[in-house]
Length: 444
Image (cartoon, rainbow, N blue to C red):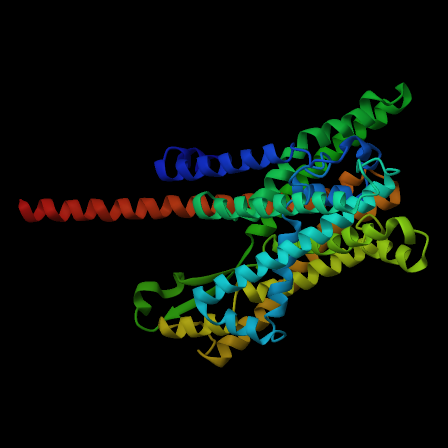
């Protein structure tokens, strides 16, 4: 991994892409420190470790603690993506039609996603502003009785969300990695130093003489656990199921060495991001009713269900990860298209007939791989949450499984993209050398 990065920096084109990526992320980091007009972020100090605060901070890179322009991060956009993709499953005929129109249809779906993001961002912004204002004893918003204050704050935060989405698209276009995932990735990484210091301060610096030994043991065990989880998750993300292939037109050239690789975790990190965003959206809307209905039975049930820091909420979160793993596996690998492409290339999976039999085989294989992948992702995300609820651990530790899954997944995708660019460049260089050698031989 380090050698790949070192070699990439030496290449001008890749160095340019890295420069664009860092520049855009730097702009985003500046935005997370620009406070929205009309609010007092200091009023949120006592809620720094609340479940919703922590999960939204994952998507905003700490922007919510400052109640900044990017307080909502890209969470509304991720939720909008989920909704639009679900509506393509024969629910909205127009969306289904657009999904089959290639590049033109993709642009139309992207526009629909942006419009839905605009609506969700405004609703969520007003909701969390009203909720946090109520929880902070009306100290967050300077003019609580003014409806226009909430509209202005919601509008500013919505503009911030759309700008963050645009920055993500610029990363995808000019930089490296998936833009939205890179924004989330950078936000999580930026909070690691402060998070570790808070744990060190809580367990060592502020602990009594008798508790310091336990504090050191806790910190060492935690670091060992993090290293082990990183190693296991990395291994799992890289695990591949190889399908032996045969090419009818060039069997002698490929033979038994040709294979079709399918990741055991076909969906990658997307199910975790989708589930996190999906479960936080109802929370932001519920926050708008915090002042009037906090004691109502229905409200408390909903709060329990859509909070990742409670057992019911953690279970729902895990179920969402499992569902999105199955759903996105078939978005990433379409069995019908894969079968058609293999036929066009004169290739087939060994012992499997081309056509419908290949489609059925790949579909069943995706189901089997998704079963393993969803259980693994759900387990890594759920265990820290349950442990935090049982032993009363810091909520940042509870969300540590989610953060690690996202961070490792995005980092591996980034390394794979850089490696692919390096191989492409070497391949082009090889062709040029062959052409020069041919010219010299001809001229000679």
